[in-house]
Amino acid sequence: MKRLEGRVAVVTGGGSGIGRATSERLAAAGCDVAVVDIDPVGAEETAGRVRQSGRHASVHVADVASKERMSALPGEVIAAHGRVDVLVNNAGVTVAQLFRDHTLEEFEWVVGVNLWGVVHGCKFFLPHLLKRDEAHIVNISSMAGLLGLPMQSSYCATKFAVRGFSESLAAELRGSSVGVTAVFPGAIRTKVLSSSPHAEGSTVEQLAGLLERHARPPEAVANRIVSAIRKKQPRVIVGAEAHLTGWLSRTSPGAAGSLIAWGFEKARARLR
Image (cartoon, rainbow, N blue to C red):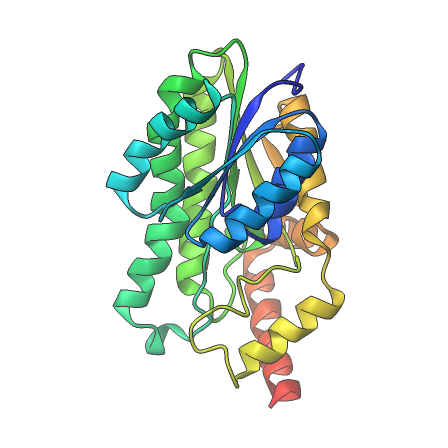
């Protein structure tokens, strides 16, 4: 997009982490922001930060997995802002669990938020985006959308799906006014792992602590998202580990899988 000033952006999962950082960064670039989150407290805090930058913000409490709720969301955003130009499908959850112990109900929850949330956002906002002179969709995948990771079967399944869906949608929209970017962050300091079911008192909680101390801040992803919107980049990979993962999955998938499995067992042994 040649101009972000005066645009209206919708950010799902905007109440914390990458969603909050992206909302703030878009506001700094001149956008008004519709903050969407299932947590009203977090969403309102993000909206307050957007308003402090001098931009208009609205709060929309929504479960992105709900078709009914998401179908009503564009009307609410347009009522609050008059239009929509940018959609960032960021809301995400995970269950850090071996597949054999992973319940189907948990799997359905992850698919509902991570995949259906993206599909719902694109389906219901796309007609409005196509009316704009320029518009953009950003779908957040993950390093886990480039290579399968242990204890992340449902998360990887959804993030691979977001990758394929985004590439298909981008091909369909080529030549239109709407650009599409898929984003693949590596290790980022967010609450997605620490808030995972079964995390408390487990090795997952310890891994979340390591991420909190050593991973990149969410602002690193937010900056790349805004840059990608400006440049109409189809793919953004954030972090050396994500670049390495992508390279290994392309050049030597068997070796990549063995390396991941070895690293997983070493990490579990250290954290026991």
